[in-house]
Length: 122
Image (tube, rainbow, N blue to C red; front, side, top):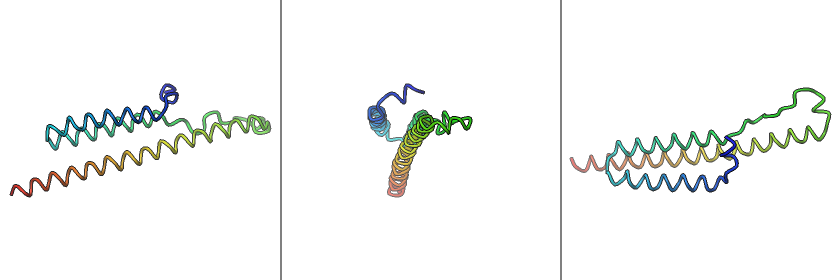
């Protein structure tokens, strides 16, 4: 899990976006509605799994006894670590909301387009 935390998040996101776009255009060429929905849900699952690997434990290294709280350096260290973990969790949550929104918009657009095509044939 530390491997994902060490990589720059920009490169991971750019790589995922590139792979998604290439796959999306290949699947779109097939012009198969079911295949498109399967692909979108599969990509969404992979994105959620990778995001869950980047979320750290929020309260890792919590002080176990009162003597840790009395030492100001140790208390500051624990507070800084928890603050960093909360910031990373917040970033992952924002990305999760953005990805979910984009996938839902894409799926809804595909469903509307599919039903418009079916209704126009009749």
